[in-house]
Image (cartoon, rainbow, N blue to C red; front, top):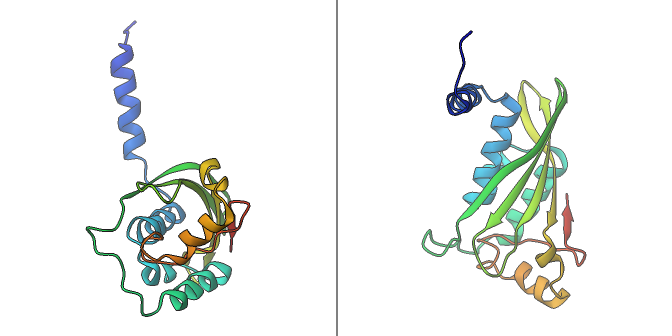
Length: 168
């Protein structure tokens, strides 16, 4: 009988996990997260959307029309990580990401992305954001100031509800 060290077994599992291919739905979700949250490229992110999500991003684009985006030096770093996923069928998928803007004036949030398979490709159909507790405890005037100030909102306007959640 051959024994395998725990370290070697863990390394093998990590290698297998790294080699697994991501689903087309997950690839679309990851691309959206990179464009919308990390790069603040609302226009390009909108090309990955349909329905309510597309309408939300188009409204956002109208709201920031004429506002110069932050330079790379002024744009905060935003990181995100997958928290959960569900692909209940061949036409629908859902991914929940934790989004962390590395800035003092915008807290972390949970972004739930609903995707549909439409016209041969995966598109984001819904976007729901739930702000983390510190963000939710901000006063309404503080939250409104963040929503109105394009520099604070990484070059785009965010409509924040007083209960700390957004849904589109």
